Image (cartoon, rainbow, N blue to C red; front, side, top):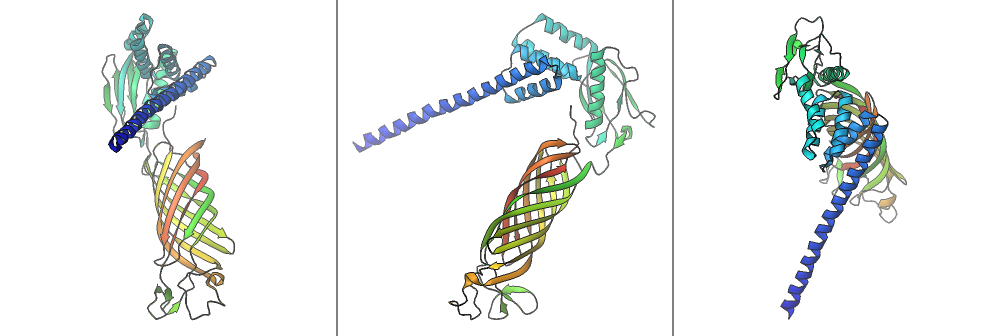
Length: 404
């Protein structure tokens, strides 16, 4: 009977789990469809106001969702790309529209693009400013926009992959010592052209970008008490007590909130990797106790997209004063009259350690980013540790990347 009851309970649990999974999947699908509807309607409203950059942004968000996109929305995405001069994106979106619903008018438009444009891949470096020129600009507005878009992308990203109007082009600064002529021809394959350094109008050199860092916000810090007694060794150094030296009145475990402010300078060697040197003040305050940290940091940074991830070595001075020393404090005092929690401490320590920070750029103040950051740190002077974290806002340099 017990076995039957056990099997019955297991069966009920399995059926309950099986029922929950489809409901969860349905809820996620419903959320995706709701977001798809919102973005699609937003595209329509923006298109009515001829706000084509906004339409383009919403279409890209829609594609990133991974949902099925209808014929009309693909066509609207093609219109936004056309307005911006992104001819290859126009072609791909028309192709996607035809895949949803075959349409003679769309196919005719694709044939016209194939007849007037060629596929080109300029292979350079993101560290270079590549000058793309067309000696005789086309007269048709759509073709001019396409050329202007290619010029802008090449200049800001060091290369270009897309479609350009048929004709002759040059790579290299006007009046420069060297230039590379090439001709864009029609066809389904990409014409690849490798750009060499001697064709670059301006190389960014070692430093791609640089700028100030300034962050401030909430700080939480903690310093646990040493587990063993700590003594001066008579020479100004500090070490564990072994019956010699003078015992220090080390603070008891202390945690508290406070403020943090960090300023410094960041230098980017690529659009992904940078370094920064900063000076930080932080405190932790609680009742009669207060600690103040003055810390120098040297960061290695990764800057993918709007993210900023940093790992730093930290070294600096912590100073503190207050009441309450660690439980092992014993210099022969009468602990009834001189209680540990009312014994004063006052001193300083120099400690090294590490810091991890993760932040995200939320506002564009070119050449700076408005920034939100979470961080945590750990330091040790060989006797006690200092650790904590916090939330900060401020400004950091904006990484120069191609933006439409």
